[in-house]
Length: 441
Image 1 (tube, rainbow, N blue to C red):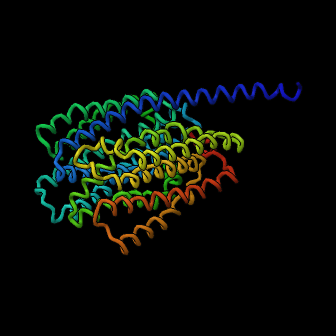
Image 2: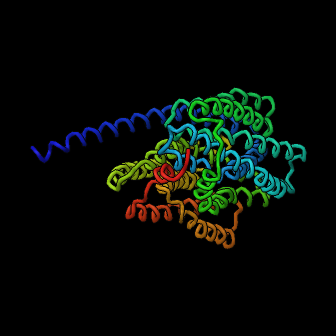
Image 3: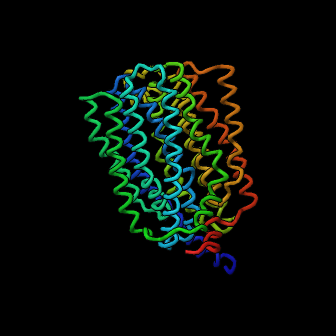
């Protein structure tokens, strides 16, 4: 009795903690499931409303927007969570981090805009779209990216606080606005119309995110060199990875656009819509996985929380791949008649999406412990693999493009498994705790 009695309160406490985490995750998944469902509906409507050549243009614009979004962030949102999770109730400290991240993003945006402009000129060269349409797409993409900076950094603060409502309303306002405005595409079925709807939705989300952020931090807090140095120390080791991330997922579209394979661009863009089914799971990483693992202070707690995460990933992969092979028609029905003949390409799409979820989740666990060194190791195998594929095989159709995108997803999974194994053997001091000791408010 004397041996088991002390264990009972600990077991009860652990059970209550797991119940709270499960309830929080369930609420988050339900609400974000609604947001992603609305986003998916918008995407599927565009597939049916836009002609294939306009959807191809919209897909290229989406590629450019990805470059803008990532190039203005470079991991700053993740840095805010890892640095601030242990001091999330310190409004002055979190406000200073947020302001420092905004200033760094403002400096990065012009450089990113130049990269986008150069990429747009190359991809649009020789295409049949009018010059004014191409210019309008670039202007809209840059405008959306600029508006999204506040939203992105605001979501990092919400994730740190596990603020389900703020994340839900921010994403919901954007999705609903786009859903209402996408009706205009029925009258004007052009990529520019869809991008305009995206801009209005992004602006609405930015307004909501800015207002909700003010209740969680001191917007008047002035950052100092220590805050900027902490953000830079976190981000710099993953800059090569971030730069390659800007490119690796978009190389296939770039190659297809240079070759003039407009039909294949539309098909790759359509299949990428199915990956949105897994987006809500990826959103759990900054919202739940990173803050929880950033606050862990013992190896036993780390291993106890890691086990269910790994088990969930294994089940997800088994179910996802089985459905892609056994019932492809269930997935392809969502895309409409224009894309119904992509049954052979579907497993590649689903497999790549699943590897992205696994790699992203393991990456989040590792960086939550402050271990950003070594994250760029996967850049070399990804780059070599893609260059070799292009050199020996080329990219001339939809299947080629999908296989090219699968190479980095597989390499990232492998490298993150190695880094996680290293992290398990040597549990580092949480970065949030270290920041709390060394950084002034």
